[in-house]
Image (cartoon, rainbow, N blue to C red; front, side):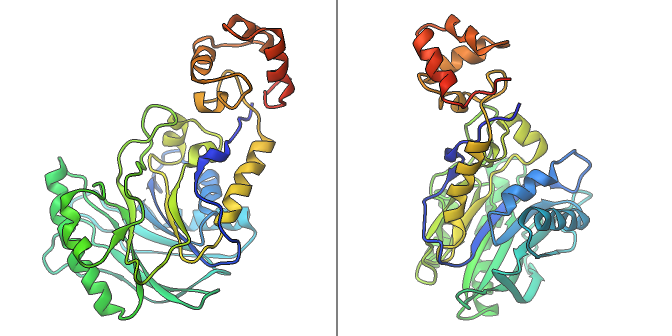
Length: 347
């Protein structure tokens, strides 16, 4: 049975549909390994952005497959490019960029940072693009900070990002900069002080972005986009709660798509208005499965709150919706309203 994907899947505000590019960043956990990743579902999420920076790209050929899947989903031309392999030892990753050709144009400057102090395990990758609607150029830079044995192993790379930020300004003067990626460190950590001193701020202040083992919950605040508010005035920014968007609980989303959610920044508005309408369309098209839907989805049924959602999960398997009368507080009238809502998967 297909499941309801809630409008709450998208942590976004509705904005004007007149505007320009929506830039996203996504650690698509080991994209390119033989791990049964659902590239079709990745493409459905990625299609909500006009430019996407990809981390944990393990094989550039996988980026090409994702590009083709995006073109199939969107019906529009896309382009892609990837860095060379980066990393110390046998474990290496690539960075990638994907962009919708109708909205974003690649200009120049695709380069891996020449790290003079050899601080980064995976040196940042950047390129200059242009928003076709506004005509404005911007620099997109992507990085995956080393995880290491603990926070102390990450701090040298975080500190070095201030120097990298200045290098981007020198390489691309008078151009807005976006520093995106999986930083493995929350934005309120004191290690960010040098970058903040240069006027950069995070798009997300306290939003967790990694999928926890508890369905519907998010854990670490690792993914972000840094920018200067005196150079950019985003129409919106946030995180896309993609599991509900593609009809998966967290366990299956982690296994088949990614353990990170994408983060985004709308340069001047962009495609975000369509995100809310997309979620509404998915809601209308899918149903709630008493045996598979997440508690948060069950709570969208009439007369079902957290306690009754938990009781539904505990009472699985359900063979017929009529059995819901076993749950305290659900009798004939309330059962009729639940069934009459049209939200249940019933044969």
